Length: 184
Length: 140
Figure 1 (cartoon, each protein chain N blue to C red):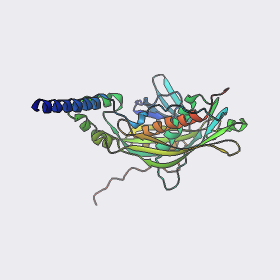
Figure 2: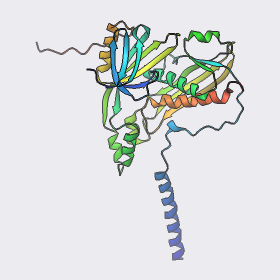
Figure 3: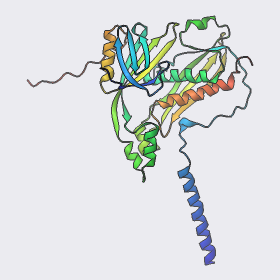
Figure 4: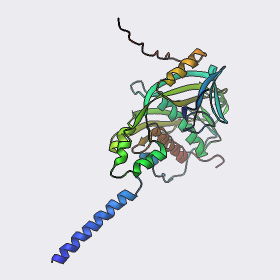
């Protein structure tokens, strides 16, 4: 009886040790490094060019200018990397006027929390940076092709502005999932 | 002699994020250059300039994170408390095709205001005028 109890205790201790070891060995899951999304559906749209408009937050939502600009620049970089369009135009580029199948991407911020790198570093549960933006893609006629909220986060390591990069990667994934590569 | 003490965050074509260089006003251009790397923004194309105060971790980047993770008994958390005051400058401009660009730079405290003043003096547009430094109080 005593042996059986001893065995139970040692098994429990071993299980607890395994869980603890797993937690120590496993890399911290920063939300800035989201697992790659599995493509489950065939992209239904195609266009040769996209124009990405400037991030325009509503008047009651204060987003620092550096975060707005970094969001816009990161989205341009990440959407270009998807390879879904022959041309990616910046807001105001007059060359986009000549593209018949141009689609327009608008970024409409919903919520923003700047967070604190110091609070994240010291507590690990506070100071998260979060940026939620509605991604709307329309065609020339104004028909909405994509309308989806995307959230970027920094929950552990990284500077606050990295939240814009995380958002941009996820927004580019939305583009990748909804648009076919040119010529397909 | 300008020093490479300004960090590029994002926005300049051909310059990697985190690259440090000197930011100067030369003639009609804002020049970000060090060694063989150079990027310019024509001052006439600048739409607006913004500055803001911020802080930066002293132990930062992948090396800083590795150092924090390597300190036993949660000592890395203490390292997160070491920060330095910085200033961020955002420059919005248009390219020759009308495309909107934004570039973000990190300066040591107070230097972004100086850079903004130099740009405004050279003819750049800024919707918010550069802040004046606090006047020194004098005894009566």
